[in-house]
Length: 227
Length: 227
DNA sequence: CCATATGTCGTCGACTTGACGATAACAAGC
DNA sequence: GCTTGTTATCGTCAAGTCGACGACATATGG
Image (cartoon, rainbow over all chains, first blue to last red; front, side, top):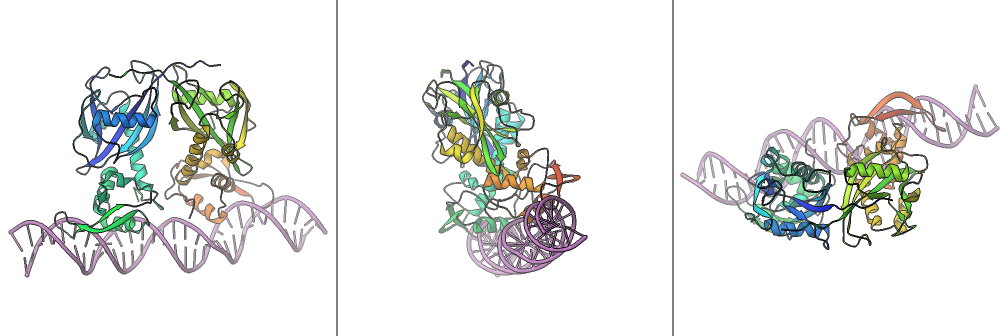
């Protein structure tokens, strides 16, 4: 029979948002060794009596000031290669969060600073540990889930227009979509959008109808990326 | 700064196959406490110097005699609620495996016996720990992945007919599909099937063309469950 | 009033889907 | 051999969906 060697267990967070037409990720400057002052995903050790998702929620609030309320949070994957943490054998459960456009993040906890960075820059630079791979996996998951779920609404404020929703798709996928076909698709999917009856005018052009997220969470058939 | 309390880390395996038109899962009789003689998913502790996927591959071979070679293996999710293991704080990384129809499994390692059980029966009975939930998550993941990937071929022998592939879909989804439309769909998707040029006759009826899995892994557009 | 920008509705052809008819090629029984 | 039954494969057709794009609605800024 096998023994059970001790592991350290952490959670790491891939928190994504859309700012200025580009997908951004929340990163912290590490306030301690190893990788002191490197950029890293927010995260930390799981406490003895909390669930994994509680740990993720707590670290998100502690390190970055992002409240879990308006945020979709789901488990991404777990990374546990020997040697991924030079201190000890560590297994990290990564979580993926989608946040609407928020005020600037604040630092706290073990982090010397927290900031939104475009994912392209984050992936091009050096991240601590194996966080570059975790981020890449999270971005790919986000891109895939936009295809067949209503998760794009999690990047929007509680009330939003079709254009704002389309901007999310364009930023996350890095493409431009036809406004007319996109409008037809999202408004003809039953239960996806709930019309508030109001309109809002932002800049020139016809005012846009204001919607709230509807009860439908699955898109059948999906919105496809290539086509 | 935070301390890092010790956790035990295990891998658990949801190994699925199709037998006699029904989806089956590989379960073991636990050979030790806790949950002595309960049915459980195969699995065990991760060793200090192996990766998570190596641990999953090793446990699969040790406990059940299933070789990793013909088997698709992917990470499913991680379960770490306090109290899920009465002995200690344990985090379990679950893996999902798709196996073709194999000879009877054999027991080994910590398992007093290993056997294939229909997933309906497995979910209706009692499984050790939180394995019922892990199994349910694995089955749902398998059902979803059949829609938009070529993973159904992992349930088949290296060479198979369109009917055998259709039988996988029907067993996993619990539906019946129109043979003509299914045939049109899978043969018209470029790169999904590689024709061997041979045919095989099994019982009465016209002999079926024999295919091998092609290079395509993504189905665009997907095969949908409901319609 | 005019130019411009954006939101929304329509139209068209190409393609996909689901239902189902028709044909092909085998086994088994007479 | 011939008939019957069974399974594999090909075709057809109407309905729905998608991408490209035209047309109109309604705002802002001169």
